[in-house]
Image 1: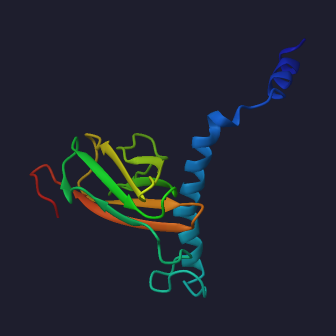
Image 2 (image 1 turned 120 degrees about the vertical axis):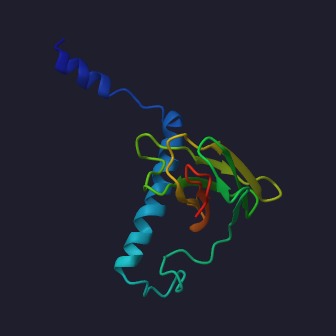
Length: 164
């Protein structure tokens, strides 16, 4: 059998989607978090549904989010706390001052997924990469099934230890 025929034969084998499920969830969240608000901005926020004040297609979020610390340095650990409906599945990512997020190379950390427990709470932690730039960091939390998006911001200190 030729190499080409073997490659076609290998491509016909079934794919175990259980291994790919986390990738699908993260891709879905990034699509919601990055693409949908961009579309809303193009529409000028004139949609009758969603949040008129922010111009996003998301209704008032049923998620409440907070971080444990407002000013950190690279290498420190940050904790995200999420409250909402019990059993709600969420995804989150931190977007740093230089625009890096969970799908960029040399990312500084802060993206994961989880499920709110029976009391409607979730907690996730991460260590911020040493190369992370000073400035604002926005954590985006999305529940794709609920269409909810919530954000919280904290700051990374300059080399002098100042948060601006």
